[in-house]
Image (cartoon, rainbow, N blue to C red; front, side, top):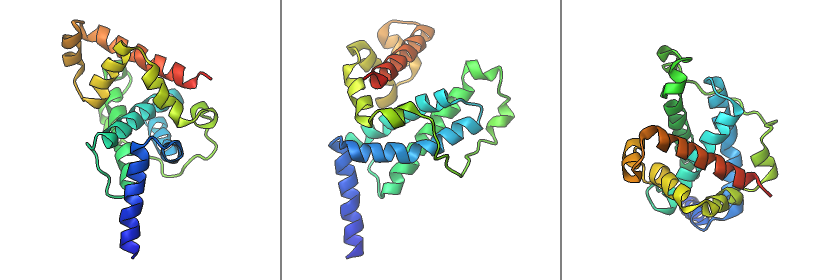
Length: 191
């Protein structure tokens, strides 16, 4: 009987995510953010970096579950998957050209997570807005931004391939992606 409940509950969580159930999505979002923020802060980042990385990772998890690219076995596997994506995205930032000047490569070998959670997080997106605003914001982006972000985050295409497809150089494509993420944040935070 208990095993049947676990299977049914897992299907309910996956179904709720696929149905864009705002309370389920917000619960997952709020529950996991402190760990990602602690990770980024402990590894040379700021709260703004943590917000960016977390939003990108959350959108990727949400999209992968909706498209059956990731089928969680348990609710905690969603949390682990989200954390892993965020960690990998932050590692990519740390390895990027902008950070190479300030981060010594040996520091990357000691990548850590702080175990305790900070319940006093001063994060306007968690306090003031609901998660569905982020999802709606994506839909309200212009087609060019949606297309670029979809190629990068959901289709996992490299920046070089995207640049080729858009007939742009790599630097312009990276700048465009950055501006699109800023616009997504701006729309999501706007009332």
